[in-house]
Length: 509
Image (tube, rainbow, N blue to C red):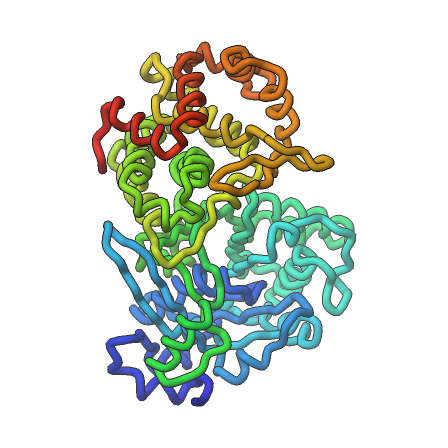
């Protein structure tokens, strides 16, 4: 069996198993320079470009710059820069599978050995966009020289690229770029812009360039959300390769869900025309709403569900969603408490729609997501994702949210250490010890060791130093939390969940 390359496309063009590009795509001009060859960009940003090209909208391809020394370019060269993307997930409650051969990438250049070719791209008038994903560590200010071949850091490389473009087009304001980083840090576009400007000053670049840099280029904050595990497991990969008749060393897998919110004006929207063809791309002047929806609905539900599922005996998200009691808890937590507790103006329709998408993602049987991993830094996640929802719910309704209170009690129970080994604390559940990887582990160990249950709960709930609020003043009942903890110990977490659902009123989604 040969590797995937361009000649395979003709044979597969009528196959119902895979979507393939038309030959005309190979004649499209290069419009994007992308820093990063990783699976995430290929599974999100490049996916949107490829889809738009198939629909005759964007009509441009991507030059990818490989910045690290790891790996090589042979696989891209061997496969004509083609790769298979297998998307698997749940959409509107139904299983969805889609496989495409992406032709978004025109070529891949090594920054280390082909820097002159990278700078040649700066002189291409058709290139108007920069994508990046260099990990969170990539957007850091380090002392850098843009005349190095190449500069050390990603911001240094980007500055050198922009300076070459400024020179090539004689400071023409029409040749600025739209720069969209996807690194997972808040205000990634603005942070990258501030670092690039600082490096411009440190490198002694002329005032005219700095004016052009600030006024003619758009550094866009963006929020990305899609699980792209990378290469599928061996069995899935072999199955796809046998079905399609080729080997693919670049094959990647992703969930079906996708979100890319980009902060920009009408000019940015016009340049990023691929946004027209997919409901997962949003270009708006303010993307804070999408950050809040993700933080509260997805991350908040993860936080309140992780300890519960793990202690109830469900090691993965996939397994827990097969249990009707856990699914009922999570569904109603999201829809009836978190969705109405977002401290940001959001329509009921949009919150409901986003809630359903979150539940689809939880139900995805193709993603192996372990709950114990989500419990890392449990306390910090409770503080940033859950407490604000408690506060907002109380502000709106004058009472404490029942499902969140139950989840908070589970959190306290999860933090009960029964063994200490040096600086490490261990809980015990499902006939095994588990490591409590949390900065508050010692705090909870001290509380569980030194106080009777009612007093311990009283001290924890009223600890405004940790929570920023006295939770009892937000309607959280000490008696209810004590009863939940007693039931966890006597009847188990799973049975207590069933008992809880039998008592509270809820409407399953």
